[in-house]
Length: 417
Ligand SMILES: Cc1ncc(COP(=O)(O)O)c(C=O)c1O
Image (tube, rainbow, N blue to C red; front, side):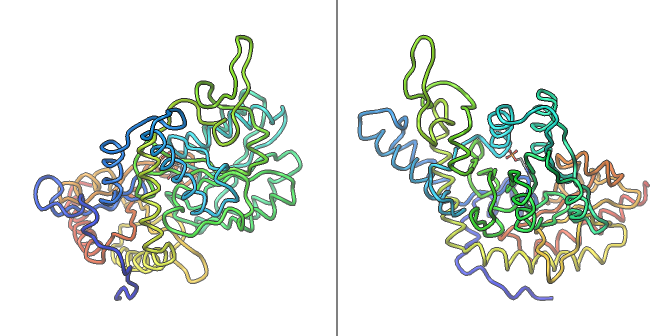
């Protein structure tokens, strides 16, 4: 099978780490993009440019440096806002990562709005960052946390979802694309049911933002959490998007500088959105560089990226089918359902850690473990899976090498199993 789709403006040389001709990264095959993506030179240059040319605090200084830093920082917010088609850049709150974005909602909205006996509905395939914050708030308030099950193909069980959604459900918080099963949840369908039920809907978009077009208005959701480092941007920066009226109704998350209007000895008043939720000096360079990463992806075209990744995923699945020891969890690629460009699998009588460790000695990076999805692994009755995750930089040749080396590794390990 030949990959027919091409990403026209993608130049592999943009990614220094993928082109090292010496050192530990020589001939690196990086297949762990779901954990974090590699960064193009444009993003690295932007970080450098900020510190070299206009390093200053934002929203404060009366000098030109601060004005320039503020302009770039607020422009980054607008770029993210346009990227997900939000109504206003005021709806974008910078956080450290998606985990912090979800905690912001659980602490601020959750602790303020939830009452004893209310229910929060999440799914068994959630990443721990979309489970633990809800456990904490549920224990504090006395709410019930319910889990939607998985069907036999490894998709979200919609019938189970419908049966658990009721008039006590105040929030449904669900992953868009699973980092382990690779399934793509039907958010529009889910949102219709959630809205009919007068509940709110939060989407964990960590694994979808860099791979598929997202339009928060069209999806008709209420909150969205994203991480910059999964989008070819730096670590330490993420964002929460929420509807303006909901953000206006929520109390602040952290208190401190930047988020206030006036501070008196007895009390304080809050700044307007988005600053009400951004206490202290933000990750300025990282926010600006994240915008650069988004420009990079937008230039390539998210639709083109999605087409390419669909083809390379089919290619990977065809190749993995040649290895009988491999059991993939999650749905297989199909014409009518989108699937992430990743595959998590367990192996008959071989531990996935051993496979990952041996592949690492050959310069191939994959991940092994529970991928922060312990409830999912427990439900499936497996302790750990190996995961290969790709993006638009992944080539057919890299997959071929991965398959060849995995076959050899399995043959070797079978001698000891
Ligand atoms: C689906 C999903 N949700 C949430 C997260 C958490 O992201 P972060 O650690 O950047 O907050 C991840 C990271 O792997 C993820 O894959």
